[in-house]
Length: 271
Image 1 (tube, rainbow, N blue to C red):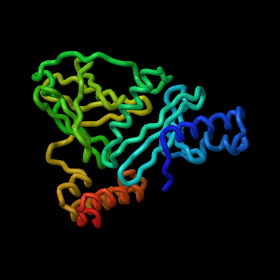
Image 2 (image 1 turned 90 degrees about the vertical axis):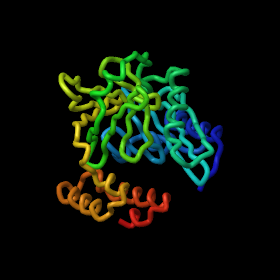
Image 3 (image 1 turned 90 degrees about the horizontal axis):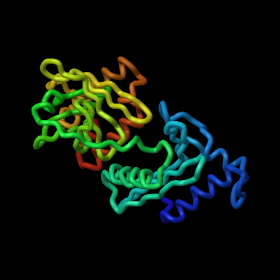
Image 4 (image 1 turned 120 degrees about the vertical axis):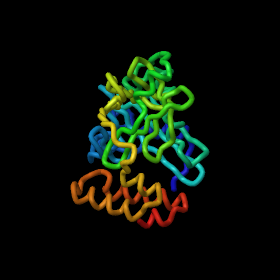
């Protein structure tokens, strides 16, 4: 793999942008460099891949970047296409560092006023635990992901399937934010009993999740519980219903297999 320093990574981003903008011809022609900042293939609803860089549209602003990882470290570089500001962050760990990198980049973006990169800063409000209780429950985000919301020591906590838990900080009666993400969680107000749904509103997409029974288990949850036979049947059912369901995408299943190998859960990995 290619090893480098954050300084050289930043210089690389600066040079690519200048060459694409015809302000430099140090290495590549403007025509070739422009391919590095021009969409070539669609990745999802909001992201594209250029020649080497991932492209991300945030509001009216375009950002480009790329991450990297090897044993012992993970890094991420991001830069603004129009104005050139950006950052290169490297960490000396290779497990679950994405939240840390994202927090560092967001902090830089706020301090240096990157356009459209983060949502406006909000102030928390105080809400009594008894008023938080109606939001506790399970909300289905997709065919293989569920958001579990619970009270933990008078604070509301969220946890997405197979991800670390995080605090949901109240900013209004039924609106919450995370400290490590720009996502806002807007719960349907509970007239009687419990809230029936929650809307996850991020800068680039919005997801509405309906409450689901506590005893209903998605395929990944079955895998995590060690019930591999039932999990395989559930994934086959999802594929039969919709072969294009992201839950049964080959790359996604391949990544799940590697995850379980890394955790030495070989039975789940093989399944």
